[in-house]
Image (cartoon, rainbow, N blue to C red; front, side):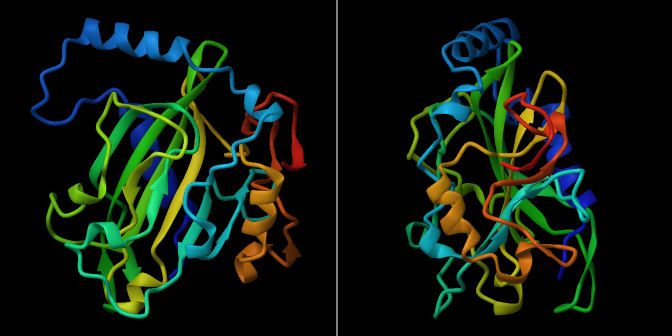
Length: 270
């Protein structure tokens, strides 16, 4: 089952447009919230710092990654506005109540939590295993990790088990941080729920990208070390193709200038 680009654009676009939305029932003083957010933002580095000093903490442990692909920019044959990691399928299904047994998802840098998605409905797609169209629900975490031209740069984790659990509270135990919380690089911020049925588990993945909130621009999450990019590249397999072209080790491929977070122009690979 292949997810179209528009599905992810819709899911992440919800974050772009509504990233300041508070959790339902949460009493927020807007002025106090803005002041706190601005104070947190000013303590973060410019995104260019990650061009000089890359993060050595990937979003998950690479030994749990089965396959994946980099961010495929608008200059690619088949663009996709996010990188993906797909997970190894456990030998035995993990009970949903055993949250700590599921793969850890890490903060890739110091920052703060700017958005939580507890139960985000995706556009209906045809599910081959069920033989019908269904609207899956994902969860997600967005971290603000840097600034660009005075605006927040967010690292978005769209956590997609590729199921509809039918319960708005189902994913809550897998989200380990709260909106506004400060995080340090390496903190476990969530766990990746992997469904017990193999036909669903094989499609379980995280879609991740950077977002320039000032320009509402998707950017490649090219903040990781060359070592991480090389190890990630080794597991891509068929997903590491752009049409018939084998993609070299990188986190961002055939990027337009706006998709390059470091402002150094269009890049074939980064």
